[in-house]
Image 1: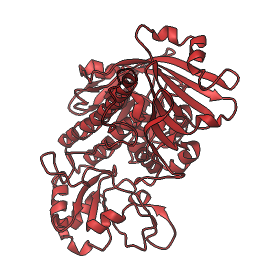
Image 2: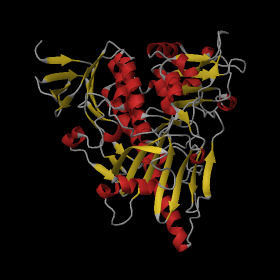
Image 3: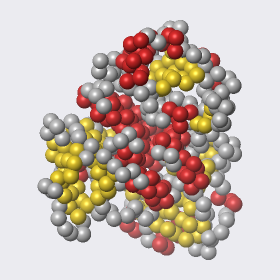
Image 4: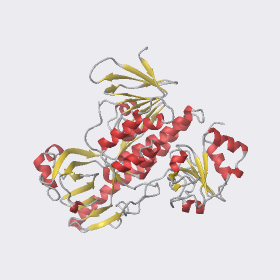
Length: 511
């Protein structure tokens, strides 16, 4: 060998985001190199929750049922006052699922999740993992990107070359800094101490609710984990220092209202400064930022890791379309165009949640109680959707309440063989789903186009739909056109004929 190993893609960072990105590319036939400076998964939990959209990404890798067994549901989430009385909240019925077909919140243990995800990724022969290796600053030209990596424990350097590189190398991202990209702050930087605890015995009084305790003496977040795991996050008050507040005696004093050394064991206590920021650029030609390298959020919504997962899910299918010659390199600019505003909206939502906690704590003293709970759990502020990019509607168009949102996923039975989730049939492709057969409306040109990009058509009448997630959409519209990342490209109805919508879809591809 000449010292250079060639791949289709290089992923820097083997956390959950990097691992998912590698897996999504590998299942599309890409040869992927993954580089990480740690020899094993980080042994302590950091992220603790993912949503139904992320479970659909795991479903694409064949891991959903495994993660369903490894996770736990949350019964609800609420804001409490200093006396423990509810100010606002929401409950989730037992075994509640949302339009994704999965739980709205799955609580997990990150080291276990990472090990399971890595095992699935490394089962692909096309994936090569380099760890522990330190990645240097990548270089690129018109045809490739390359990066030199050095063994952390010593040894010879290796040079990797690929068509593209995904930098999922964390909030401190050396690659982002080397590219000169800047973080744009939303102005919410607060010091907290995060404490993970293992319960020694069941403590029913703790419940299965995420709680934001808006006490003027100290704002506290309580999070139910999976199994015997619990998390507390303590907002530091003026004059307190993170280094001092993680002292064991101090941590037990903070935990005293809930647990004691007799009932629990401290797994870790760490000081953090919660940030709210987003990178000004996510792409430099063949290099893309993803996850914490591109955006950071306070953890109040539990959407930090989820946002990173959305990044690589958005990027993987677009890179694959370019690789197959279906579209050109310029289409990759839609990555930041779509993901940037979506991620920013969630970061801003988390900031609003944090500010609401502050306002509620202050109100105990001032009597000036907030008039809006939109940012609270169960409030009126919903999750964002896409507003432009590879969609039938663009930012200047009036929204229709469907385009740019996640497509619902029902359980279906198309051939009498039994129930299956719709994503399993779609298999990471574009698809058109309708209640009646629309194939007669396809022109020869559109039929050839759909065949070329591997799109599928599903006819789901009432008897083939075994759960109601799509019922309303198919009652109001003739069809939905859905992208590989499960976002709705556009609707088909009297105002938007199938031929017109397929023309719009085809405009994003090469002739």
